[in-house]
Image 1 (cartoon, rainbow, N blue to C red):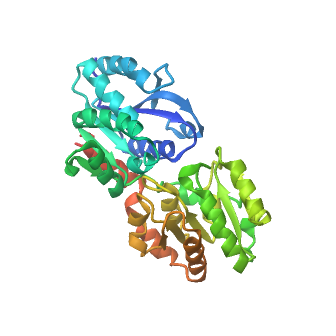
Image 2: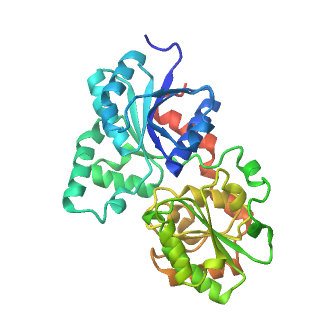
Image 3: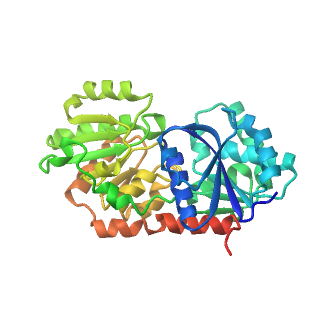
Length: 371
């Protein structure tokens, strides 16, 4: 039987502590705050972000550990519950949802959220690997009722890959800036380095993996440290690249000035006390942690990677952009920004579109759930 009030189903796999999971929980919290009933359909349910879900959100575990295997269970859910709309998070979830809706025979409005610049992520793969990934996208994406991209770059990349009219893709900024952000940032100082005004801390954050290109950040910092030995570098996050980064820091002779404190439940207390934030990524969808740094008034430097940093920093207006992998240019930009940082007020104004409630309201429009 249909639910007496419109229900939004969110279909996702939580597989860690990454930005996608965090943004999805931020969005759900914003939707619930606006009175929207939400049911979260989970493939995998791992990681700390699920703890932040509002108690009103019903969690439904689909009993499988792979998105494609969830298609039968998702089809049964759609037939039984008949939600007003289904929001699928990530490419594989979107493709699975198209097939499940066809099997269910329902008219549920289906919207896909995309947060990755896929062509860059696939650039190192073989022709066959790209063909196997792109072919189902081209077959299934036209059957979606809506596609949301987190940046203009992701939108253009998706339209190109899926061979869709770009007007079919809506850009909605991530719900990065939450009502509790300022309170989290003002929590007690989490590390002694951040309590020492005489030793500026440069901060990076993200999974310790290839996408974030922290080796380039370490090489850039080695150049900075040679000129400014009082500076220190801290990289928040965890991942398979930790051993490599620790070895590289030792090889560069900066081991004593580099800290890798791992994943932090409250990174904002770190970010707010940093003198400079640096994004060194090879690619992004829309870099949430860069958005958070600006929202907290922290000066930033970023690689001009696809996609997001150029949009966030307005082509360099709010912080320097440098070529991906260029540690010399990155070091130069870091020193220049330490010497002449932009004002906190200016940086906060740059990310006004990334507030949680503004993003949630826009999603409700695309999902057809506004009055």
